[in-house]
Length: 370
Image 1: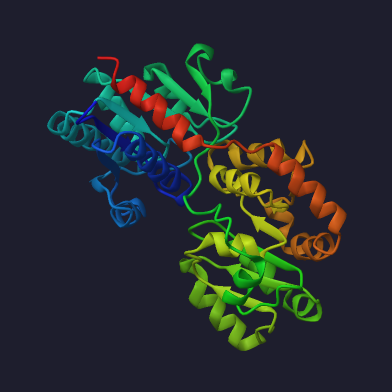
Image 2: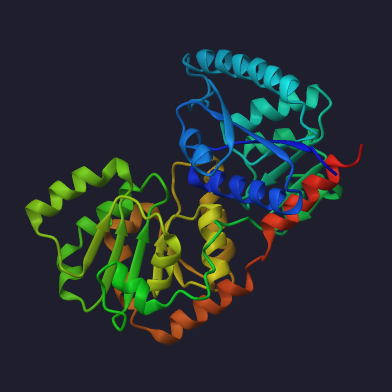
């Protein structure tokens, strides 16, 4: 079928953007002539990342509610939502999509509400094990709900749920990539244990402080570290390292473009517990220590992490305990090959393969119903 039109909406963090782009790419592989338009939030990272992936995007002046909800500033947030919904409706009328897909993030709420009012079929993708308010509300208006965890019928109508897993970034599963060449890219020795620390696309303050507070232990260890600080924190960290002295076994960068190389070089990964990160760790069978962010709605990252911890597929350190516990635990675990093997194997058992393709097929089924 030629000339299908699909709108994909959402963003805010890499955890929403990477799956959205993966779904778009999978749709294009199945139906190369499909026209795809993204709708995101102005000023958020999707406005750069989506065009870089080769897709057009429209930005809405939408932002999140401020907690506690009774704050007067939320009046402006509601006004911006109504403006965004009007702009989304105008965009949808002009683009005339066959289906609207929501991947989470501020923009998806306005876009899918507008799509529903215009009679456009909707599909939402819930990445977390605890559904957010936006998707719980949108679920009543969606024909299909793609989820990454079992037991999601406590949030959504059971007859609309499809268990698909979360799409991950393309290129992570390069079978030709070796640990030796990946380690060399970061200036590391392939035979020494390596810990990768990633705080998500925006960085993570507590995880960064955990490293800065344990520089002596890192320097004295026979362990190598790859540390992605996030762009927001990078300069401050460089200044701190200039004062305290950077250990030779610590590779520091603000952003890692080739995560496939970083994952391949690593024996253990320290990460936030965002849905996309967990999906990548499972698909790659990587042992990990998860540090759930406390700054997310409904504490959903702790729920994500516990889904793995309960199956001995990851370890978890609370954000409040990270500065004292995280690096000592990581140094201990990375030296225990049997424990690493168990964690990695159990993580891989929880992986879903071809998630993007499965979701793309569901999108196309909706699009072709007419």
